[in-house]
Length: 267
Ligand SMILES: [Zn+2]
Image (cartoon, rainbow, N blue to C red; front, side, top):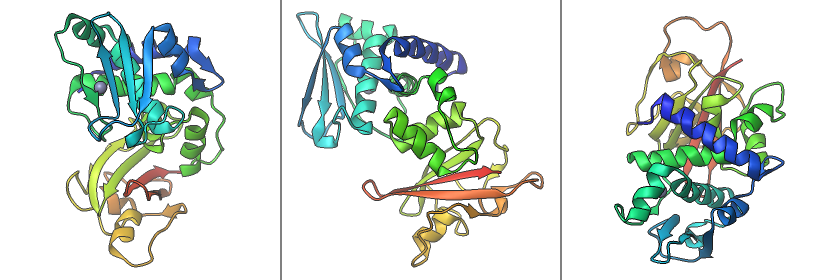
């Protein structure tokens, strides 16, 4: 797991680089790759990777982006893979072993949660490069928080909904809890530091609590609610105290990937 200190280092490094390569809210990854003298190839490869960084005998770096898995460099998914490979190139501890031949070039795959620290670092750096903290805090957002806040930020940075939520959990303007599920099974969860640290009523790998908006979507007919719903904290958590404001849940249904994201917050 990434330590807070390591995160701080990576966040600062990515922020400094982004300052030089941002136009508006967008970090120009192509320009950054060119400055790093890395050759970029956008092509249809097999299903085994999203992005790949290779260092060859001519001492040059090559970044491959796999459009077969949707990694077009002008799309959120492709931008994330591109930034992830740039992370391996920019972070000393990743680049140097690759140049020395101590590690073989490896393809990177998008996943909810990487167990490999090097992959975790590259993902984290990618999110900081695409959504630099300074710009993230500056971005205009609606007064009242909802899923639209996240969607608006994702549009500005051209990042995926999930990557944007993860960044928001860390440095967003509202404390949130996020639960990603698939076929009624919880895949993954996270919450902001300021969100109540109540015990969860669910865990990854197990079914969703049934009386939640996401849980009802999977278990009841015609229960695909997209609006902001009021929910009882008791449905998701074992509340340690009585909340003074209303808890909400709003779901985002990713039809292409088949997962549901529950966003949970208080007024
Ligand atoms: Zn990687």
